[in-house]
Length: 471
Image (cartoon, rainbow, N blue to C red; front, side, top):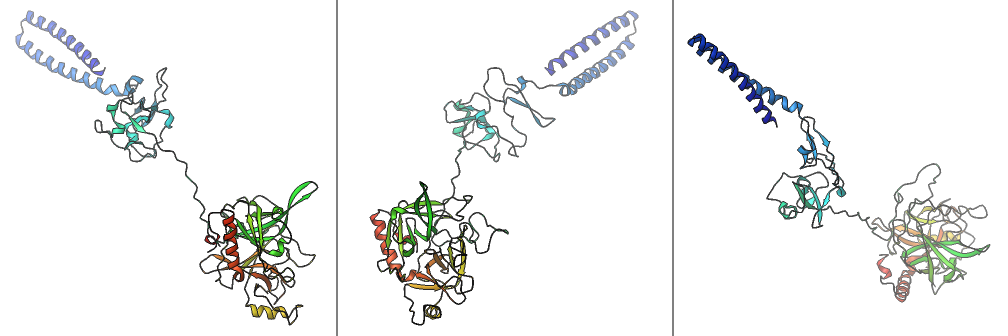
């Protein structure tokens, strides 16, 4: 368009100058001044050249300032880019065209550009991808992070992005594979026996309302609450009996004297519990019905010798950060052990059951020393401590108490994990100075626990041997 204007202007100027020169020449000839005529013609030729050059310069330099982009100028990319301003100028798509406008090729490719939604592009004729500008397709896949955009390679494109396939109707569009949208899978919890979460699960709880003897949420993931079902006012409720420990996804270890004469059908096990009165915990607790109860064959109810009981669950527990098993190794450190439970905080009628799981740090005693200490109590000098017991505690105010029966006593085994050393059994009062608490000794009956668990689980057709969970 600009060239046509220049040509027309030049022609007009030349015609005008020629007419003027012809008139002047005729006059000069009539007058007869030949010398003056030659000088005049040379001068006019110079002026004619200067005028033509001036007109061309004016027209050319004035063009860009007056130019306005139109939809016809931008039909390749469907939007225009003003080089002087550096911004996108959208162009309306023609009526009946279902596509949405797209930005032209950016001047700085790959520098923080925002890509249009995938559904704004045409589908390839073969249905295997979308038609996108060539610079958004790299190695046959749509660029989604704005990085690695390549220069045009017409005639040398990847087969999946070839113009020769005629999969796309727009010039410089190529057929490109749609990006793969896969939802990230959560990392599976790696179960391990004896993992104590000293700082809690997902968060550490502190503050004036939180007591030092209260466990963090999920700190002892093997802790179990043994409940019994009972009807009150025609409504079935679960009442707390005692504590226990998860030694296998399908097995809970507790004290035989806690179970008493209760049948398996009367019992429910709650795992992952922390605050018994509220449900705001980060992870939910799990409840399982009890299928079978097995009590140690040498259990002596009156003296509580061999007070071991195994509860086999109807369905295995799901092992999660707040529900996991405890180890059952025979070797452990006698110091820095922990006992847990929801039992009373004091001995006697003044004692109150705890809503939040409590913990107490204890040391394990040598059995002979424990026996001597217990002989100084009302048990008398002839008391003999059975080998099925182990003792721990003895510091004033640091002890398990009523309601903690069946709960585990765990000790570190040297590699950061904990093994169960005992089961809360009995004591002389609670927290008396120099008087340790008495626990069922796990080492004494470990073989029975393992053998019985394997036999019952095999009969229940549970595929994984029990021993794989606590070693």
